[in-house]
Amino acid sequence: DSGVTQTPKHLITATGQRVTLRCSPRSGDLSVYWYQQSLDQGLQFLIQYYNGEERAKGNILERFSAQQFPDLHSELNLSSLELGDSALYFCASSVRSWGDTQYFGPGTRLTVL
Amino acid sequence: GQQVMQIPQYQHVQEGEDFTTYCNSSTTLSNIQWYKQRPGGHPVFLIQLVKSGEVKKQKRLTFQFGEAKKNSSLHITATQTTDVGTYFCFDSNYQLIWGAGTKLIIKP
Image 1 (cartoon, rainbow over the protein chains, first blue to last red):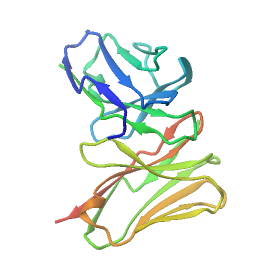
Image 2 (cartoon, rainbow over the protein chains, first blue to last red; image 1 turned 135 degrees about the vertical axis):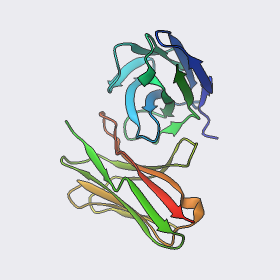
Image 3 (cartoon, chains in turn orange, yellow; image 1 turned 180 degrees about the vertical axis):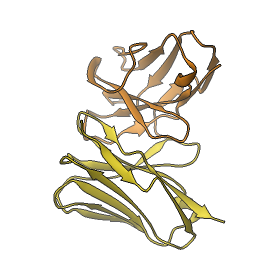
């Protein structure tokens, strides 16, 4: 158990819908990272927040947005969902920022029908 | 932009054989981290390499960082079924670029 929690574990929705994925980092970790992993693929970095502020941005679509709240939990919002958005979404946290070990949550499996 | 190329994509080995995965970059890597993802699981941190030419060992696993900091490798000696999974390298600078992973498959 990494100490990072993600909810929900599974999400099934339809095209065009909007969903919110939630992540609680390990106690004391200031950074949260979001990743997308399509079936049997690598990890695509989406976005990083550090202590409530956006710190780095990867290949995140405009339909996707995220935020980190004062209690350091984070939410990833995915809107106007398409079939291709079906994937495993991981959240990771680290004590500070780049160069620190990342601890991954169990992931949220999103299926768009 | 910077890319981290990881090869091979898959490696099938008999239990007891060795396994190696390589990461290469056209630009200098900051720090290399290696992670392992078991089937159905999440990535788990294995090690970080920081210095040019660094070599670190964890039991049967040997990690190397190239002298020019443009490549890294992970070598597993005498693979066991518990080694099955996908191994990722990761350049932990602000671009947060991951290799595509090498899947280790043990032949039955």
